[in-house]
Image (cartoon, rainbow, N blue to C red; front, side, top):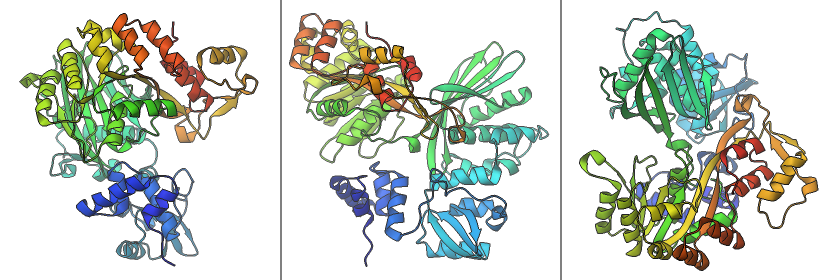
Length: 581
């Protein structure tokens, strides 16, 4: 009996549709490679989905940390049977031994040469399991090294001198620091170098967005921002903090002798077979320099508009606007609220060979195939406004402008929308509808804004409750009343049977109670009546009432929907949304 094809299995599972499979097959014919790899490169599927499909196709069990199979058994000497270097180089992890047969997880169990190598190294017959490379490498980190990387390096002491060998041997030919080849526990480099490497590895493994390192009068503080909240971690010794900051400056090509002025830079690292960008900011304080490193892990970003947080009605309205041939779409929200990810997910949905899509960003955080992306450089005159004017000579269909900051950029966006282009951009306002008076303050005429505006949206990020330990509870009457008043649901669910969830904490979420974040939105498609209101007096309250009549709802109401679905807690949702006055 012939095996089903990977694409057919994934279509039956509902992970992809026929159109995406055909696009992936076309991409495969042009670029080569396996169909699963092509689906992942096009952001149509995840590595885990491809691995699960391969598991069904071959009849080989799928192993992951979630199903508890990707969990090497202690006490069997597995670390001696499969050495760490071989495990890392081959992306294989031993799981357990039974009747002199070694169970091992790998990415490609059809690789006969790999199986023979494992058999040769272990001296045993092999029972293969399928997993993803990212998960295998994470398990290798935990199994072979154990505990906090930062704690282990600090415990080694600061006995090394500054003149010891560095880790130049793990710098790739294109200048990227290769953390995959850094074995922290055995590193011979200076203590400051080992600590910087350990901090970055641990931060990435904990899904950190920002690393904060700073000195105070009598102590050093190391904090990791995880899911929007800063958490303390073991701090390095005070006497090597300056050396650590100098190390990061060298990687970022900054001036290590300048300690009086702020400096910004960036560098790239290679980790778990993906490239991660690190944006660096160094700022002088009264106690010394403060270092903040932002981690831009493109491998952890899924540009799938169906999973980032839109409710069905909101997704339909946003895509309706994004499918228009021309007009303006604005997404509002504070810095770090995920606006760039949302707009890139929209572009990833609408992109096709028939469309010329161009973006102007500061900086380009997510690189996408099939889209021309430009980073602004104000120091040489390449601003949002000047770049947008040059874009119009490049025959674009869709234009993304990273942010509208001034009158010049706003007018350039408006002219582009009026001349047959679809323009997407962002603004910093507290709500979506407040973008209207903000644009009018920038000098845009009411009649022009009313006629070109397609859609206004706002977003925030809420923390997701850990699915393994969240606790259901019957909400008190005060929460029930607030839900009834603010959720804007029609029809309203049975209030006598409401169940909400709250955080608890378990080992899988590092006892935080939350794991990951999801966006909540308010999306307002610009109807004919809303256009008349903008043209007449641009009253935000009137716009909100008209939008509500049409069935749209605000951020707080979106948050209550996520609470009702068990995605987040009441406390976290209320902390990131405002009551409409």
